[in-house]
Image 1 (cartoon, rainbow, N blue to C red):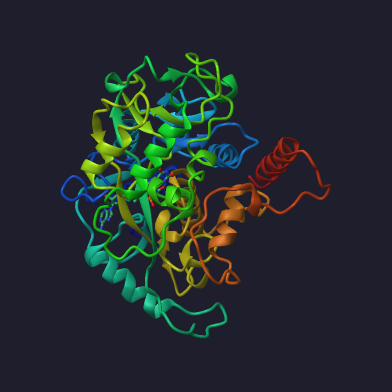
Image 2: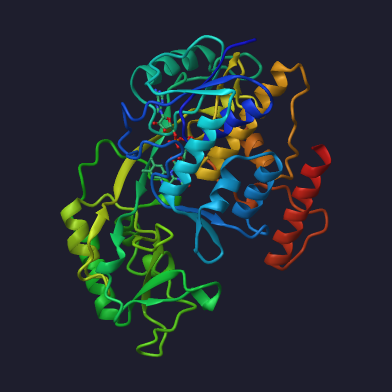
Length: 444
Ligand SMILES: Cc1cc2nc3c(=O)[nH]c(=O)nc-3n(C[C@H](O)[C@H](O)[C@H](O)COP(=O)(O)OP(=O)(O)OC[C@H]3O[C@@H](n4cnc5c(N)ncnc54)[C@H](O)[C@@H]3O)c2cc1C
């Protein structure tokens, strides 16, 4: 039987390995931890969440909820495990990251067809290989990929594309700090969900006075950042809070510090702005500051974020950090099953393939794994309808008409419109979700 290697035990790698094994193929999963860690990883287990502990909305009439529902239909490993490790997070699926990683590690280790080898791969191996090494791929493997891509970067018609021949593309991504629950002043902060929806899963820190918000914003935009390396592009969805604040005094108030849907129990009024903290662990001993990904120096994070009402004594369990995020120019390189057009035994999955986000990465690994299994079993490829979120994402990464390629997360905008337009957003999203699930069920 053909040798199958999956490189990288993150979101895409574990899904790919599990899908192949579930289809009866023996697979070796290579994970460099614990011998080597990327700058964002620190836990030895597989499938580590490097930043937020949320997999976004659960409800099916949302892009993230629809993606997860489709993944479950396709046999996902990560979604059911996430549900079993969920921590309360309003309408979102958030997990206890350690429990999640441990549960995935156990499931992979227990599968008789998966062998885990813990060392760094520095060259693309022979045989069928799924490269799922994530946005921080570096060293020998990055060079080896670079060589293969340079040779493979052609249009579908076979003509070489001009200019940059196969280099990694990149942008910069940031992670938010985590603070201890006991250091939050609950005389100022209060539990509660926006518009009272869901349980009291968030701790809210209200800026009741404009002057306090102003002081905070001024400190934020004048604080010292960590060395920037060669940061040129920041991913909009993960923009550092200080960069957002520099865009305008009110920008944070209309973004992560939006106060709508809240009444401060002390003043009985809606705050001027409000910072939300989300549980990191089910016991609620650690909280992350929602939307506060940052590149400020660690000392500056303490000084500035302690100006947030209720966080004056905040203890930092982890500081926010910023990292390079690399991906390949997939529209000119990959098929919709994530295989390299010029050498089908090489497959890319996860963030490196140009999908963006934990679950999107997991979904791409799942599809890559299923596709390879079908190919090896001489079955026709699984063609996912573009009306599904998974199908729309795979179509996007392999669509040559996309000229300036940017990583893409699940969103309703990439689904084709409904035949009969629906005005109301909720109803429209529900109809899009119903259509996606029906189409997926039909082809499965
Ligand atoms: C700082 C930062 C913050 C982020 N924040 C978020 C967020 O809040 N929400 C979100 O949805 N997404 C976030 N992302 C994106 C996130 O990385 C992806 O969503 C997801 O983790 C990508 O999954 P993946 O499988 O592609 O890679 P990863 O999950 O990163 O997995 C790659 C794995 O491959 C291993 N590996 C790497 N090179 C080798 C090698 N040569 N040999 C063997 N093993 C190797 C690594 O150790 C790692 O375990 C963030 C990314 C970064 C860098």
